[in-house]
Image (cartoon, rainbow over all chains, first blue to last red; front, side, top):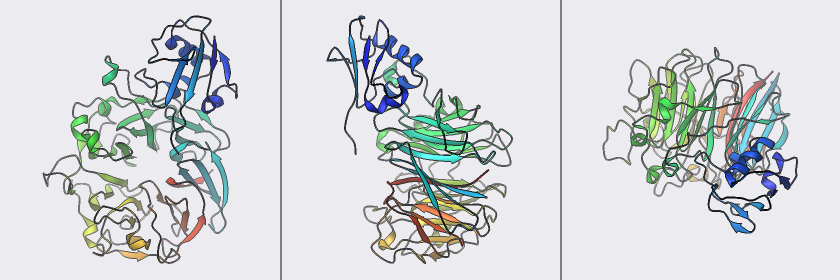
Amino acid sequence: MKVLLPSPLASYTANRREVEAAGATLDELLRDLDRRYPGIRFRVIDEQDAIRPHIKIFVNREQASGIARRLSPSDEVLVVAALSGG
Amino acid sequence: MRLLVLVSTRKGLFILASDASRRAWSIEGPHFLGESVNHAVLDPRDRRTLLAAVKAGHLGPTVFRSDDAGRTWKEARTPPAFPKAADSSQGLSVSHVFWLAPGHASQPQRWYAGTSPQGLFVSDDGGRNWKGVEGFNAHPDRLKWIGGLQDAPPDGGTLHSLAVDPFDADHLYIGLSTGGSFESRDAGASWTPLNAGVAADFLPDPDAAYGHDPHCMRVHPAVRDIVYQQNHCGIYRLERGANRWTRIGENMPKDIGDIGFPMTLHPRDPKTAWVFPMDGGTVWPRVCVGGRPAAYVTRDAGASWQRQDRGLPAEQAWFTVKRQAMTADTLDPVGLYFGTTGGEVWASRDEGASWECIRRHLPQVHAVEAALAG
């Protein structure tokens, strides 16, 4: 399925902001993404499997509260890095 | 001979370079522009491998490695991370890697990392893969030592001042802010508090065994069993054998006090050390005392201190020098370097007798390390 990534993660994907990955859950999708682009998962998900603060993940424009969220092949996943900070 | 000064900042890493004269400095970078670099260290064992602790504002923490002194970088395959807890709400998560330390000379691939919150990690493949030192991270007293969130500094509790005894690969020192100074004599399997004689004005027990706030502890690199620390509550020296610190900061001028963050040692003379005092009065401004920055040097193991401010601003300079942001090179005479929260890097070619600003307009400086590149 289509995964849209924010600019802070572009270094992992050779600057591609739109990539493909597969999985029946958000967790599986992120693991597949990490196989394709090593290191990317830990920048978004911490070691307790929580979505990191200031990172939001949307599935079809609906915010996911955790990585257990189920997915279907036609879903679109959007990862957003919030703009807070300075 | 190429001398590097690694300047880790809130917005990236900069590498200053000079030769033995230390008169002209080039700058290279930024590496990791926009990402917070807490520490970068050149491996003194091969003078080529460079590790950097990096965190983008909203992304997870990691470590990058360079095999060519910073020309190219590769991220660690397994960055420092706590184990996943059965109840994930109770598990720990690394906020950022704060301190990097090369292992003993006899273990050329070993590195240690200290994190926020207070965690200790080790790599045995040159920083490519990291695992927790469970002797500390899972120690039953760890939470008792470090306290709760209300005890942590504003940027979070940190494990810092990681040092390997140059005469004993199994002998490790760490500083916990808060928590105190600790040592292990079995490569991290077990730990003992090392805080006797250290004040903790914020604790009710004047002889507390732990809970202190060492800002920066340094183990002497050439003379066995000499340790110094700049603590939240004073400057101390420890000669092992005795396990009780002596507050050598009592000998600082009273109008300056003995509060600050960094502690820098002479690479050869065990009686010479430098501090950079900060204002610890009233509400603890933690800026240069009176707006007049100065290093202070002792050449007699803390019995006396001399002010070193030639070349530094004479007034209205209100920066802070963080705990990792002052260091010494190994040349003769020793060169000193410090970075400021205002993005300046200052250097001295004559052991602090005079100072020169060698770089302005950088982001807030977190750490400064000097190293000879191969």
